[in-house]
Length: 46
Image 1: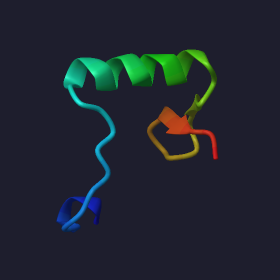
Image 2 (image 1 turned 60 degrees about the horizontal axis):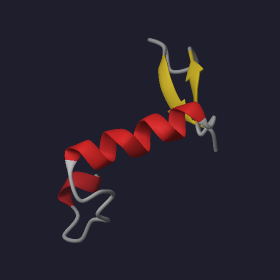
Image 3 (image 1 turned 30 degrees about the vertical axis):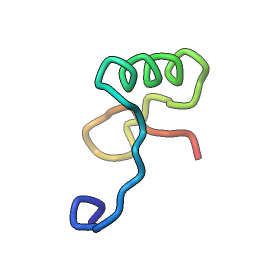
Image 4 (image 1 turned 90 degrees about the vertical axis):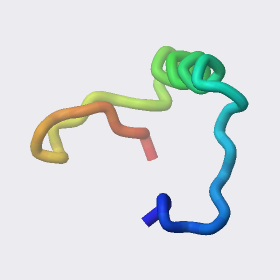
């Protein structure tokens, strides 16, 4: 799992920056709502 990896990618320099990036991605369509995972949720469009 990613949490066991010795090296991980830094996605943002702060939580505020991470949230701003996430909101921007939501607004630009990087993510979508999906019920395919059984409980519904927001998933990345791949």
